[in-house]
Length: 427
Image 1 (tube, rainbow, N blue to C red):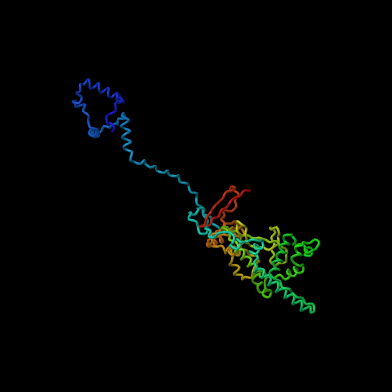
Image 2: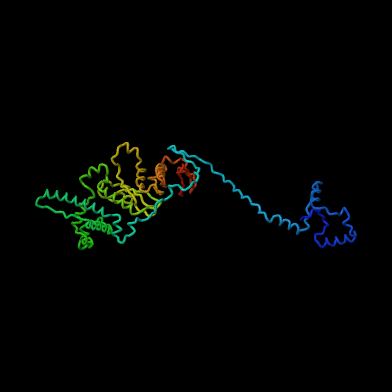
């Protein structure tokens, strides 16, 4: 216990000094110290209470270091140290919230919406990869037949035989005594016919005469060994994919009627043989050709300039074609129906329709991207990422090009689940 006696600057600090002084005092007083009422020791409890009553401040004697340390250890041995309060982080100043208005009466705000759990539109629900029929391929022919199937060759066989019989019948009627007979083709001959066409493309012989290809001096032996030249010319002449009797009626509603059945079968095989990943891309392609076709398009920005334009939906990681539409120009529609529909927006939704509600992301360029398309796809659990033309009425004036803005700076604005960003690239 600590002593409650008043501190004396002349008091010795070691026990042996205290003992010597006590012996000297006891010899001088002759042992009468205990009988002196002034020198009687007062109990600690009484002394402390009397001093508190007198109102005199008491100073603790720190001379005995051992007693002090013992008392502190006994007092704090069974108590936990006090917990420190965590420091409060300084509050960041929020930027000023701005609201941008557009010509379409849409309002964008610079305040970012609160972050929630991952939306259903960002959760992929299908695994990507080749289909089961493509896992057991052993030869090149089997791989080729995954896309060009036996049903397509049978369609070509029926079309060629039907057309050949019709033409030869007309010839026999007009030239009696010089009748011709048609030897019907089959699937094996059609496979050889397709192989010759592919081989001619491999040798870059599209502008080379058939007589030169089958020549015994300068030609290639594989052509002569596969098929006779006249037979190849006949198959090429009578090549058809539909019924001629109903073509005129179908052409009034569909400009792709001569090959529509073959095109639908080909697209079905593309979707079956491969499952795309989490990202899709929609874009256009110009297949260059200068053949006689009413669907021919002219685009000076393309290398070929003339050709067939096809809109494709492809896998972003593999560039594998999944779905496509041939550009046919204006179809036969009523004026009211054509006015109430957005051709570009409907085109994108048709191309990605087999993969909606699967958590995929569609990437487009400024020809296809629009705010209405993003909202429509978002309602189908599909997200859209793309660039936009600056003349769109959904873009506010504050995001238009401005020379005062620094390079590599961005402005973000939000409208519920939509995000619009304007970026300034380097010159």
